[in-house]
Amino acid sequence: MVQSFLPVLERIGEEIEGLAGRGRPADYIPALAAVDPNRFGMAVAELDGTVYGVGEWQQPFSTQSVTKVFTLALDLAREGDSLWEHVGREPSGNPFNSLVQLEYEHGIPRNPFINAGALVVTDRLHRLTGDASGNLLDFLRTESSNQDLDFNRDVAASETAHGDRNAALAHFMASYGNITTPVPTLLREYFRQCAIEASCADLAVATGFLARHGIRADGTRLLTRSQAKQVNAVMMTCGTYDAAGDFAYRVGLPGKSGVGGAIIAVVPGRCTLCVWSPGLDDRGNSVAGVAALDRFTTITGLSVF
Image (tube, rainbow, N blue to C red; front, top):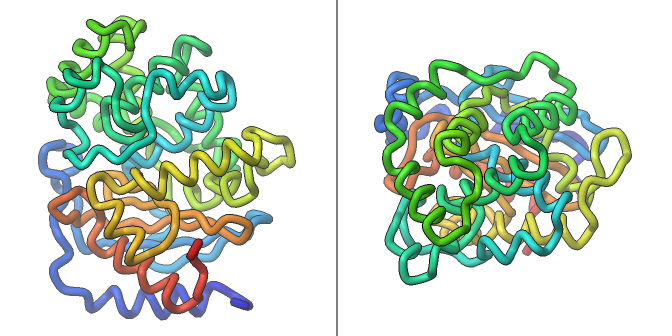
């Protein structure tokens, strides 16, 4: 049993410092392209919210697709299994912004974590709440105990200016009736959720409800135990773009990455993690982040396998 995560994190931080070939930032989003790929932070949060960190673990960064986990949980909590009539639960095997499968699968995205699937989930949450991005931000502020979390307007504007592929995905799904929010409104909500800034500490603590089987930080239940299992399962099979098999092989935890360089991961019943390093591999995952999580599960023996 690990007595304290801090020595483990310090050891990982030292090993990552010497890691060569850190990848490169997401250069297709200009607001992210200039971030130093060698930056690194990592945090672990226990079930009671106690958090340990190393490196730049309190430095805010652009969360990007990591927020798709929380949007999924918020919608699933409201509408339950009917969500799965509009988005699948299978790995796509294609890039996260691919249009290829939508036509022959009649506008139903493969899973909630590719861009098309996340647009559907955002659409459904917006229909239920009237403010998908605002509900997401409120949730993250509450669960992380950080009321200073906010949207980065420059990142949102940058994504909007370069969002033609996402607009195409949304319009295509709308032609099948799988999107009902006006596309300009939907894209605004989607880009705002991707542009939330948070730190490793914030995200590790905010993800805790998935390690507590659906229980929020205040002891109230957001998801049933079964729904929390569902979210963790989809993270395991679909959370790291088309590298989910390799991530499961190396790390052995449910995880969700974002092109800002963050990855969140869950050890059910034990703890949650967030690692951040902006240098990405060819499939959009943080090179140092995957390596750090690999080392964490190897050193501690904590994995779902």
